Length: 114
Length: 111
Image (tube, rainbow over all chains, first blue to last red):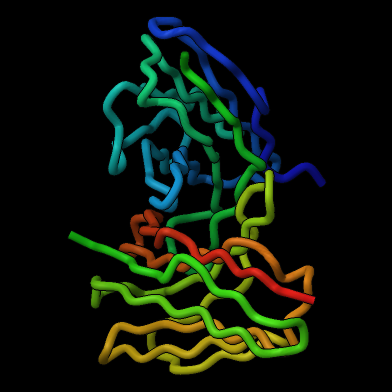
């Protein structure tokens, strides 16, 4: 009964380093999303995917790339980390894009860029 | 653009009712949601309401929707210390799957 699993849970990077955050879901959901959460700003959508092999930009896509090579996995990459990317990152998934199929969230990845 | 606004903080006493308010701007939203976030955890869906409804009740939770004023509220009856968390309001953008979240309201429940 895993739901949405994010790895790693915590990470500290130096400016300029790269890393990949992994999101895995076992609910056979078509749609997957990456958000960032910053104090006082709620969640903002970075990128999302409406199915295997597809990706699309969200509200704040700059500095991030994503890939959805397998239906169950959605990867978020930071090619050259910047201190402004210090945040908590959440992955979510939903069966489809209609509103009566709500998004299910992982527990987050806390990322600090020094 | 689309925007969702919430007050940032609410403090109540255990046993009282809590009312968390939200306003949104996108009149084409089909569904509106309430999520709960406990410390160190992800967002948990509490309830959602279809835009052609004006009220939905689910045990201690009552959602009221005023579509004319674009105002959504969440009432928690008999608030318990376990209800202390951040509550997020969100609206969907049609069938895109995309959600716009408010900033979150921190609910503090005092014993």
